[in-house]
Length: 150
Image (tube, rainbow, N blue to C red; front, top):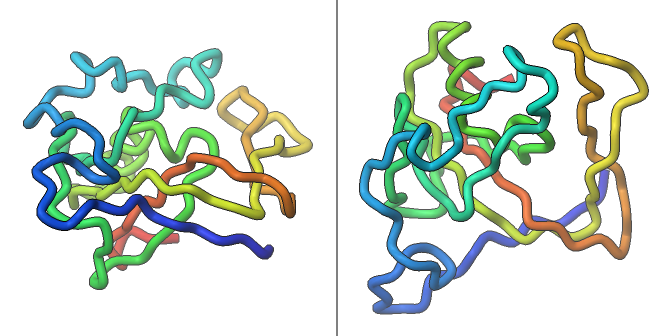
C-alpha cells in the first residue's frame, strides 16, 4: 500500500513537546488522561481513546518523548485500537511484553482508515488501512521493540 508518513517536527531550540505542542504533563496516568479504556474488554469503546500528542507509553503512564525516531525499534502505523494506550498496554501485558512503547503522532498521506469486512473475535468491526491518494490523516506510529513486533 502506498502512503507517506511525516512525523511532527520540533523547532530547533524549542522547549515545547513534539510539533510545538505544549509540554507533556510528566508521567500522568492513563486513567487521569482518559486513555485507560480497553476495547478488548469493552467492545463498544472501539477504537478507544487516542492521545492528543506524542508520548511514551510506560506501564500505566504516558511520559514525554525524548526523540521522535527510534532506530533500535520497528515503526508500525497504528490503525484503530492500536493507537489506544489502554489497548496497547492490555495487549502487551497479555503477551508478557513490558518494554515502553514510543507513540509518535504523525501526518499520514495516501492512507485512510476503513473497516474490516468482519466482526472480530473481540466483538467489534476492526479498522483497516485503505489506500486513498488524497487522504491526509493524523495517525500514530508506534515504535515496537523487535521482540514485540508482529
